[in-house]
Image (tube, rainbow, N blue to C red; front, side, top):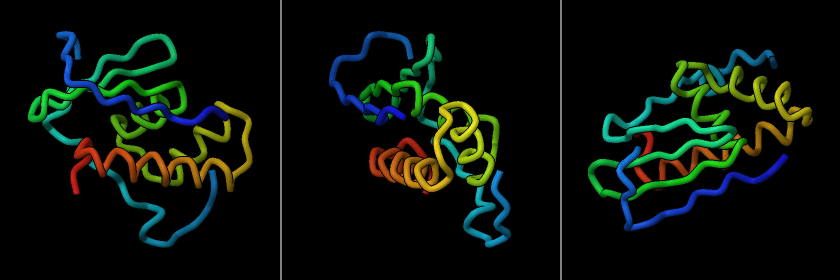
Length: 111
């Protein structure tokens, strides 16, 4: 599985199943209302309207972001990575947690 590439830039281009019942695994993450998204072939571009920063997500990040847009809980997002990239559960879980942390650090997700 490839790592998610989050590239920050000051230049705005004008476009924007595992079973675990613990509460944190069933959490749904809210996207920031200040973020516009453009989905491209296997990637996504995010524009934070407040900071005027844009971010590029590679295929892994785009799959995670799209799952967040669909309101999937963390377990389903991990399951989607396992299916899409044919990786093991532990790797997918680690990657989802890392990406969510990066997205939160950049205020792309609601706290």
